[in-house]
Image (cartoon, rainbow, N blue to C red):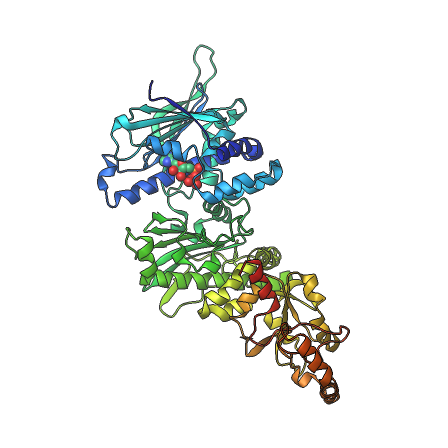
Length: 615
Ligand code: ADP
Ligand code: MG
């Protein structure tokens, strides 16, 4: 056949394929989750395109995914009636890694199987996971809207290359056939396949069908066997997880759903599932991951929230739904009010989206406050605040909207509550270690919630090496007469702790917050006070210890300033290009001199950062 073309995989794909088949060996069954989720995505895409082009449905408006196996041929087949692939799309989508972030990521993998398996799990290997169980994959497809003769067959053994050929395919959509490896026998079994569908794909809103089997006695001394009946049955719940009542969803199902949408290996730290009613109606299912993704700092790829309108998938990465400093949040928002053909541009302007964004932001902050509270009270005293199975927050009603639980939940037993509390108590620290620095961006980005964000921040200090001191903790420990929250910024904790600028504070036993995140300097420009107490950098201006300084000290300082006047004049003259002022100070105890910047001036730390960035 002249249309038959052999093409090499892109280098990164070949590398990925090698890793997939070796590193993911211990978790083979995920291949089915990935292929079913692709089938479901393909149906979502068709529905979306058909909003403007209903003719794409042809005579097939009912969408489903069919899963079958052939024991004799040793194949598993997954068939959908979704958008399909053109020849060109098959070449591009099944031969290269289009997403630039992912491509960079793959090229950075170390080759160390254990480490890489962890990383790979984070972004999901998708289609290529089929090669964990198959030594040959055949994809036959026709894109919606193209004539039957423009079908495509893609085949590959998962090594260096793949083949594409033109075929005639009357059915719209895609059929993927996995030719199983010798050691993948276990998947040629209806019970096993149903079990995997139940575990990973129950939340998919499309029906997943399998052919019914029945037992047939053997004849003439032959053993009996299961035989296909030609009748198809739905083997999943076939309703979107978030649209179901809470009480019907187990924690495991919430966790599996999270893993599917986030491609995360690990279970999430917390989630919140609510139906919001009022002037804007929507369902939100939001998750806080336990680990930062590899591209957290890439602000271009910012959002993790999928937007649905009345169960129809509209878009991924809907950044209009949450502010950028909450870009670590994953989940789904399903609106009943937005038009189905809403575009990204339209989202930016929509009043409903503004309400959703505000509501979702508050919800996430509420979840974090909840985790923080449980962290603080610890396992002994957390009783009575624990929701079953998750870190759900108690809804804080908005003035214009009523937040209702999707359905009541049963109260936990005392033992369950205690176990849950023990489990909850370390979560905020875990969250903060991964995402604290991102959360701080909120000080500059979300003025309306600045106070709530400030309360969620944690720092190390001169009395605590762990990043666990809140502004409120600090205030509660302030010395009598102290009227500012003191902090210092530096590159590292060691540098902060050993700064000469801390000497007088140490001597007087005044706690100083030690800030070592790169964003601290910038973020603190937006936070000048906490709960009425000003924040004061110990590295800025002539630190005025106010009432903390006794009369004798003040007098000594004034006298020193007087007697050192001639020396100061000389130093000022000698340093006139380098220093704006030279002062006698009381802030030092052991060191002879230190550099400070003027109040309102750019700190040395920020100046260094800008210099590093080439400014
Ligand atoms: P992802 O789903 O994250 O995009 P995958 O590796 O799972 O990555 O799939 C790669 C691409 O292959 C998809 O984006 C899609 O374009 C195409 N694809 C895979 N399966 C199907 C399918 N059943 N129907 C149509 N296109 C598909
Ligand atoms: Mg996929």
